[in-house]
Length: 154
Image (cartoon, rainbow, N blue to C red; front, top):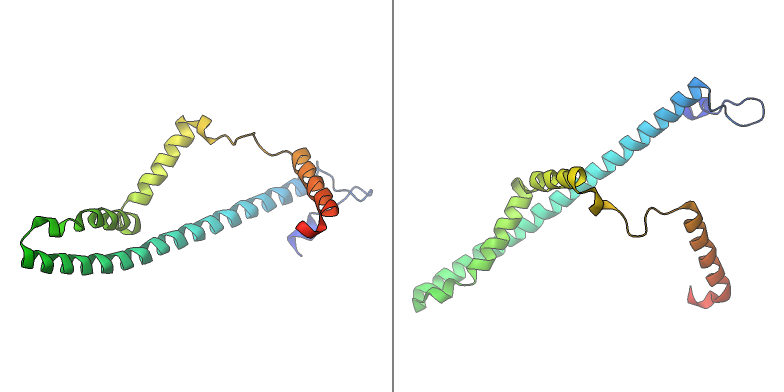
């Protein structure tokens, strides 16, 4: 338990002293570790999302190349420009995923998110405000009551 055990100093009544500098240092360390853990979790989730977009890009690129070959061979037979029409939307889709998987799209999204956080804070408020302990407890009690009244529905 190491660091956690040293955080459990008490004043004799069984409760830790909040004015104790070592207790505060321990709480700060716990908070820093918690923040670092969540930051690393978010990094891994973001890396996974980028990898998923790259994988989708590979599949779309294969489909796009097949469509280019098919449309080009059809165009050579019929000599009509309309035979190449399916390539237009596919080009945009492949371009979008190329930008997402290997381009600067992620950097532009992050820059836009920073701009929103700095200049448009009102867009970030949750409907109904932050959840409160009382509201959470109320919902928990309501769920328990619902389970008691209708046990077959849960």
